[in-house]
Length: 46
Image (cartoon, rainbow, N blue to C red):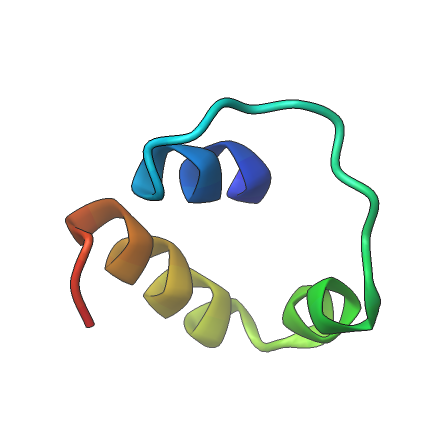
């Protein structure tokens, strides 16, 4: 779901995503932090 939201935010297309250490750190973030990131990507602003 996060990968799809990110692809939409950058106007790209969704394909299989190989996680990197950065993505693993996002995955370990608190739910509030993850929600904030998804919200920022959806609104296309920070």
